[in-house]
Image (cartoon, rainbow over all chains, first blue to last red; front, top):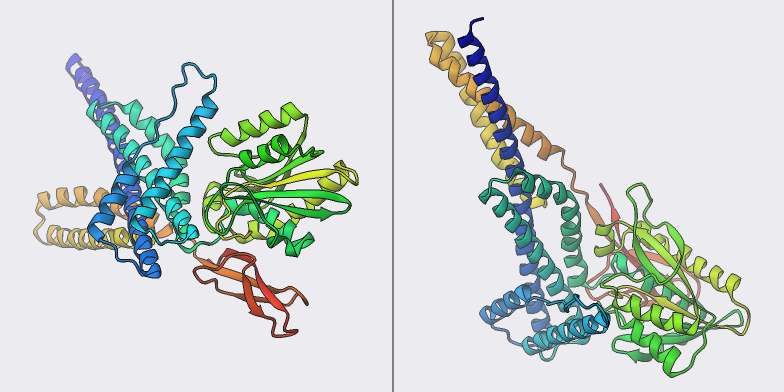
Length: 370
Length: 117
């Protein structure tokens, strides 16, 4: 081979490497585009579900609703933003965060009531949950599209690869939010209702009349006193069947700080995300406060219990992310009895007769009373 | 998801059909006329058909599980259990009429979804 042949080969190999890279970018772009079109489809479906649910509630209460005005308001609510408190000086940030979150919740209630003044509380809460799901789906769609556009604009392969690597995990979450639309529009229990369900089962088993003796300790949060093997169990949970999570920290603050209750232990029951290899509905013990979310309630409960030296136990019901947001799966529903038995065992083994115990059913109580 | 898959399967199937027809046409034309440019068209169409076929296979293999909703209604007195389909507005511990066996009060003990395929 002479020098010209070598040069021709070199050019061919360089061209081959270049085309290979371009094809790889093209493949990644196409994959991201297919995910984006899926997210857009789910976002539009969520907005459609919110609007049709508003119309259904309007028909139920005999109210007339202007479709154009409704679409405009729903669009505004979905685009609205929660501005997190400044965290450069983190001292007291939880109180500030709680303040902002409560304002957001009240504003959303007011907005729904403005459109449907005669709507029932359960319908308002379910509509709020639907708006929250549509809001989250809209945000994910826009954020993913933003990174994709930036990656294309700056021809950044690494940005696109990072986005592509994240998409399967994001898709799990998007599909979970999509399935939550059905549960909230129909008002059926979701996987996250597991904690509330165990608390309700406890009340139903040991004090069937307890459903009548509810005490509202904080907004949308109830407590029922249940006798159990010589112990006094105070069951705290969100007030169902509307889709609320309650203010569990405020309820415990009222019981322990204001009323001076001295519980021997506090048992929190909540849904927990499982590992891929774990079975749905597996029951796991824990020590500490089992509460997800932004961490406001967890922080406040830890503050109170640390100050008063109260022992914290937890019972977790394992499930996948889609299961936590969609209508409760058979595996999770069948594990409720096991979780209840575990709670009973913990109370019997770790407290003595005459003790007071607080059982907290954590999670959204959609489709579960009391 | 199901509608989206249906739409894309229809699109890819139509494209696949068109590619197969085109390949068959150009193969026949090449065999009859022995015209070399026809073979170039076939060379371009085959990888394109392969790409469309792969996507079609991937979509066809994609399993979207089907679920059915279940409502378990229990009698408070005798424990008689009845299984049905939940209606909008149903919730756990809602009163659900009287027991056909002992006339005791019944309630919704559970609402869940069950995988059917």
